[in-house]
Length: 388
View 1 (cartoon, rainbow, N blue to C red):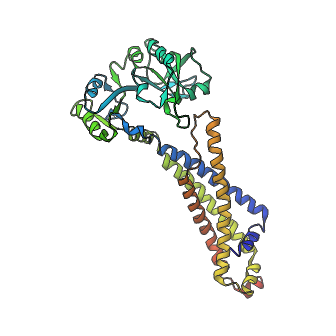
View 2: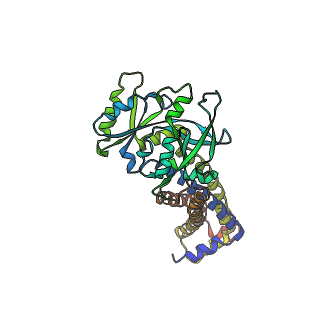
């Protein structure tokens, strides 16, 4: 630490170059902080205590294969099963076919399966009594300025209705809220419609459901209940696979995209570019200070000390830019989430991302400073002072 003033002075010898390099490092770690936050958010999806109490049952062959509705009654008879609900993917889009919204056709008791979300008693009653009624998540309602009583036109990219078109019209009868405002639920960003209305209005879905959700009486018995559910359909034309809601969510996300691989690929390209850029900066800085480094050796600095000074300069440069970048990502993440009304989840940079980021900063700092530091260490005093 006693040489910190030397390191700091050398770092700001060329202020413009140092500032530009710092901005590049800051941008790289800002991107890393935000992308790693998204990766962590996806990785943690469904990891709630209640997730272990809910099991999801789908077709063993593919998640697009449907199951008979009659399976519900048999599942409800199994020991340890508290409640069984079912749902079907609708594939809803609002205003534009590319504007997809999570829309599910659900059984009447589907909302009861999720005690962490709430619907007012009056709106719940209206939903039960209105065939074309839908419940919309509060985050979605806020985004599109929907309110109870509005007509809601949706387009399904999968299911036609009775007139053969894929245009559907619904009535908004209620809004779904979360009892834990800080714990955003997927239902808050989605739409629930009546499965019965859906089943009767399209020619393809007669008596079939997409998946079942089962609440178990004792979470420690989840494995046993899951095996018992799958045994009901063993050796049939609709064999099932039952897993915890957490595992089902993770599998579903993985089928859409390997978020972790995408993040690693992007950051690999970014950090490779950063290595070249910062490495060139450090090499140029050492070349310009050849005579100064020779003077340091002349007054008694050992070769190892010169090596350490250059490496420390490189590490301080990357640490400074990296910490600023991650700090900015920690601030911008929640701001972007709040600005999107919760539709985009950009959590603050978690502790694990900080740990990975700091390790990367140290590694990059040492790597880009290694060659210039070795050149400085091997410097011949006479040749350096002579400008050779």
